[in-house]
Image (cartoon, rainbow, N blue to C red; front, top):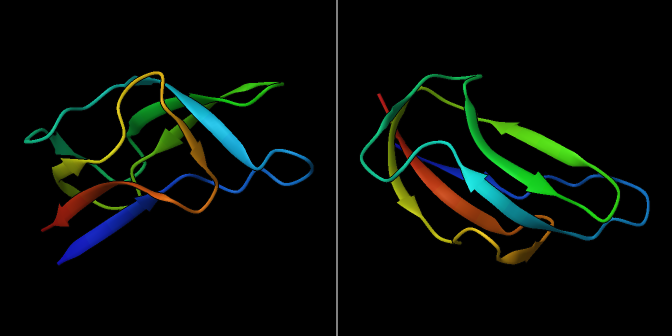
Length: 79
């Protein structure tokens, strides 16, 4: 089962964020709640955790890309 990882909705005026650094790569194992990616809005850096345990199947947006909230940024193949 594939789980979509979406750019979080930060509320307020933040409608997009820039990917600062992926802490996992495609093919890496990841546990639910583990740090997956760090993103930055115009006001704050946020650590995004994996929503499921499994293997990172696909990363759809690279470091330094700005992505709108709600957009799928990665997929995890859940165990």
